[in-house]
Image (tube, rainbow, N blue to C red; front, side, top):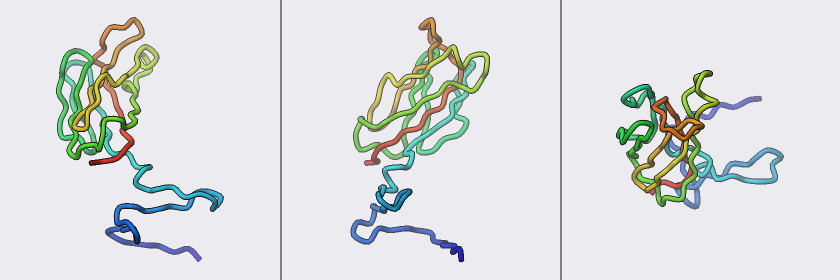
Length: 134
């Protein structure tokens, strides 16, 4: 018989912010908070960048063509978080672009999108961050 659990808050027993989840095979556990994205956004390009959708992003700054700063609502605990990025899903440009992080801080991340020739490119981009919040 299946069960449904409906709650507004889940709190750990020994540490309020630590929830262990049993993994596949019932042989390992994973800390739930460690597996959640702490920030993500989709930034439209083609001219002035526009923040289309996001989580934990207060604003973006257009630094120059293809270079955008995403500022966080809640800071990261350190600047050694993991970041994943992807250029805009457009069949004509996706193979011609890559996205890199050129600056990380606890309060923001700077993203640069460029094509394979090395020129900055204003196409859209998205990213997700994994790590600990302050």
